[in-house]
Amino acid sequence: MHRYFIINKPFDMVSQFVSSHDVRLLGELPFEFPEGTHAIGRLDNHSEGLLILTTNKKVTRLLFQGKMPHERTYLVKVKGEMSEATLQRLKEGVPICVGEGEEYITTPCRVEIVERPDGLFDHPRELPFKVPHTWLLITLTEGKFHQVRKMVGAVSHRCQRLIRVSIENLLLGDLQPGEVRELPEEEFFHLLKITDYSD
Image (cartoon, rainbow, N blue to C red; front, side, top):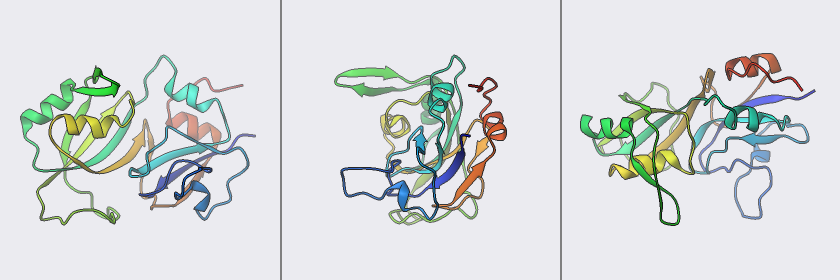
């Protein structure tokens, strides 16, 4: 029987159990994952938040390669105060680099300016609050390499924090950095809005 987990991936940890580099790995979390567990929809080492782990190899295909796109929402802190005009550019789509000399126009998405959430865990490299900044909530249905960071960079704002807070109805919630929660299979797929997951 397959098993399904969500974690709040901490800053400065890669989404892997094995690496040839000297980096913090998922195996350092205080949890005994079963053999064959792997990450779905990875986050880079500087990104934080919701990460799916499972022993089911079909989840990547069901979630990211199916006909129906699945929404992913990120809480993003950028340097500087973002204007409404710039916000609109992000919503409509901006050009980002996706390869050597290859430009891609991002699909229209939902973006809104929000307040820093109460109780948000601190970040070891976060600049002081008095430095001008903007918190954004960005919801995408695509996931190019480093897409969110490239999007805000394309409108002249540097990404300071990137936290994935949901994938469809699967929420990070109050899970603290490094915490793990196991979900029953039926609930896991229901929250991800995947209806046909049988073998």
